Image 1 (tube, rainbow, N blue to C red):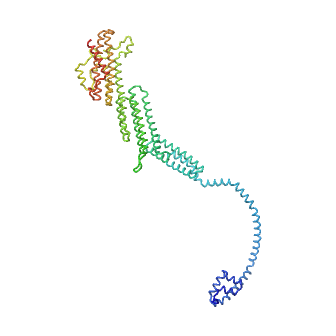
Image 2 (cartoon, helix red, strand yellow):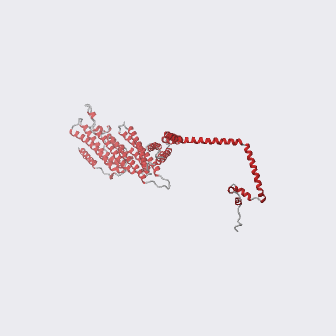
Image 3 (cartoon, rainbow, N blue to C red):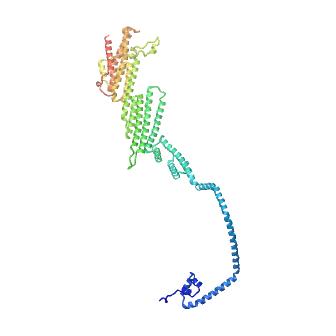
Length: 577
């Protein structure tokens, strides 16, 4: 079985050929040809040597022809190869020389590199700046753009620019240029903050204030409570300035007047302007504060309690200032007619503020009661002073200073000339009729006594003013004040009557006895009218005419009763004489 083992064609050819030929048979170039031989048939295989010999002869002829025809090329190729060899030798020597000079060149290059490093760095920086010129210009322009936006009140763009500067500073914390731009932007932002805060101290409507507060919130420099307090402080400063302007204007308007009535009107005018300005200013602040800080959309969390406390403190403080001003100024007005209009104005003001929880009507009553008390009491005293000056014999120094002049006698200044000879004295029936007459109608018999008639008119003028604003709690006090002034007037008249009676009794009068008797009769008649007609009438005018009360509930006071008792004693004594 081992003798029948088959061999491949290359193995067979290798076994029958030389060693060099057998190695060529195993090369990769011979493999395709051997494969071709295995695919030939026997006749084709027998004819293959002939074809190979023919191909070899053809190739030999072609090579011979090529050598004959292309010998110049071969000669040129030989020459070129020789030249190339010499050139390569020259190149090798040049390279050796070059390699020997390279260290020197390298050291020179290193020295040049070191010398030009600063210049290269500057050039690189300049090239980098040139490359990013637009971006650097934008960054450098941030402070200028921010300042322009603030100056033009374009706060939204200003905040965006400031935010961009902050972002850049965060990204490049070690860059001095960016940090410098950030510092300049911070200075402009501070200017914007001052500008927005200044808006809160100036005259501004709700939209402008809402806008300013909105930007302050976006700046995030104040908490909500601090921002609310700043808002109220600024509006309070503006309101105080407005109220001071009203005060200065009013003070200049009444400065040159010394008349009492004019002064009252000036004070009343001042209070009206002040209350109007106060009402408008405080109402605006309350409305603005409520809209900006307290109102919340549906579903949102309610405002913090501290915000409500701040508004309550603001309103309480300004109401207290208003009440302090009224407490100091109302007594200077003291005219019930003027006080009535002021009370109406203040009541309307308090009612309007009641919608926002600022009803201060209860605090107005005591202030106006005190003002009415002082005003009416002063009018009573002024009327009594005028009466006392009219009957005081010492109140005629001008006539007494002349030797040729005589001072007026009681019969001349107490009585009208038409009744000087027989002074009218009311009877009991007339007194009953007078007491039954309306309390606001003065007895006509008082016309016969001009000083007493003037006294009556002055008291009635005070009571007519009181009728416009008559606090019920003041009846007893006003009646006591009226009786006190009536008692003073009665005392002065009693002194005058006693003086006239003493002059007649002692015969010290420079006139005849008839004139002395006429003076005494005039004093007695005036006293009778004062005690029995004038005093009951003015008391009824106050109690029944103004307050509608019953006279039986108000007895005569101790002071007035004592003076009236003295008059009764003197009148009885004068009648017996």
